[in-house]
Image (cartoon, rainbow, N blue to C red; front, side):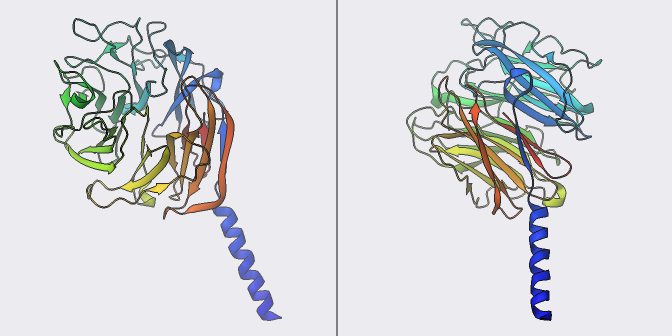
Length: 393
């Protein structure tokens, strides 16, 4: 009898601990009917969110914030100073945001056909527009174009900030001046050392002639250690659509390159990637998520050993194509991976997700999905202080 009681007590203890370790996942629509959410957390755990509204070819970007874990949000503030100057078509072209020094939101986006100022050159191409919240935190500064000499912006843009040093990195891909075609595209980085007040002319980040997938997205991220990471998709010889990571540990002066995942396809994927960092308690590794051949993967990557073997973990997708990963991690080291399924040009779809433990194993009972994703939209995700996850879509 005592043995049976002991066995039952052990079973009950295990069951309770397993239940406690199962994080809650909540899916919520973008407030105010927006699409293409982009999230950033500030130094106090506050949530900052931008989203798109309007015509996909010429709409607007709005900013809201929450101090109660997303239960309520502030009144929207329009980011773009010129109405209708933001593009969302293709999902890959939407605005991106990062939190700068003093928890100041910094935003970049692809300018619409009507947007001003234009990129340089006779054709006056699409500008990479930038703005940040003003000192009074009541409005965004007038939009500025950051392309100095290398126009040709299409799908790829991003922004990353180092809140300790005040550096801001605006990133895009375009052909080198005087060149054309995907094979000539490079990653360009415009650096600000004064929190976005001014930017130096862009410099090329990748020395390898990988080319870049013209209408594929990018992602930039600065780790707590100050390392700048950039993810992109190549277009070498038109058929090599590999996912790459660039790493700089000296504030964009030099970069090393890592091929994250190879892929063969003679067409543009219109794909996006995501980069986040685990908490220091969970190891502090960089987590990268990407798409390959209609499937979603994520993996840990270390700045100290960027060329070490990577072990991708595949999402348990149900419907192709799976695209547009979002990833979040909590203090316990658990990781939420979310992605879209069944989306297409002007076509919505569904959101699916799975939670993994700190060793990368899928947590039983922690998958799910919703079926009302709007056209051109994608998920964003964050972890609350209690370890639960929220997906905004």
